[in-house]
Amino acid sequence: MFFDSQFATNPTYRKSPMNQEQKLNIDGLDYPLSTLSDAAKSQLQMLQITEQEIQRLQWQLAIAQTARNGYAQALKAALPSATELALQSDTLKLNCAPGAFTSNGVVATMGRDGEIQTSP
Image (cartoon, rainbow, N blue to C red; front, side, top):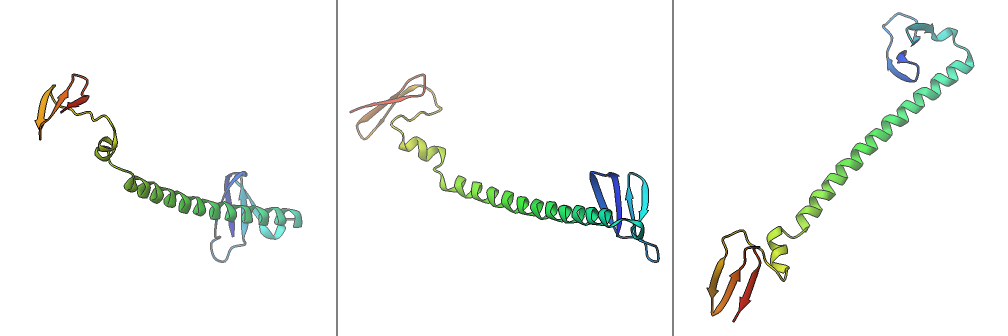
């Protein structure tokens, strides 16, 4: 393994070239793995485990975000449309010129504000 880091707190990993001793590179300095103390090897292992956990959590977050988007789309499809909402309302506002309309003996008058009033 080859540890390469621009900053020690933000490491990246890559495999070492074949036939070369494995090295740890932090802040531009190469450290042969065979020369690391047990404490340093332990910290490196914990760093690798932590990075794997971060990657696992990022995948979980991506899965959760995808699910959330699906639920949002399903919710949107389950909600009534603007027209359905307007039909359920006591007051129906239309975008047309003010005037009176007659249908089946009922006169509907629309004011300038778009509100319709009916009278028999």
